Image (cartoon, rainbow, N blue to C red; front, side, top):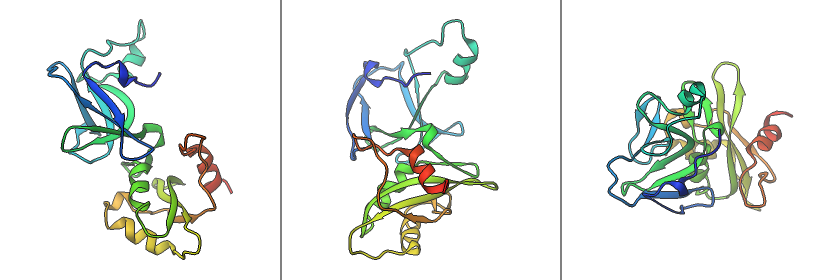
Length: 204
């Protein structure tokens, strides 16, 4: 299955988001046959809550002669599962922040690493940060932060964990702790190499 191309959807305007890791789109027409939502576990989420972007409208009917794949990507309600994670604001602008495969699966929750990163980047002394899921036999994955400290600044793990806990629910707390690293592996475009990061953190 390929990624959904939002540029091919007429009612949308595409623009850069608030950070290098996201972009936004908004409905620019009175198209009553087109509908988009942020969903988690089959329920629509309110503004600023991260979930999968699902779209309903004249996008695609399915895969040619492939009922199984069609049922995987289009649900019984007619919503297409984009595979993209994001949220929307009070103005109805949608922000794409990552892919479903990058989510941290903690217990029955799905945690968007980008959400953790955006908060922790505001913590004094943090130069760079990346969220990851530490494999755990009991809970699936534990939300973990890889942190690069500003030069000459001392930060301890508890300070980072306590700071994040002020802004998120228990499911997004750093149950896997904090790993202080020299750098975060990234592409030439600045995108985090999450698979490489996972190996760096947990395959020691």
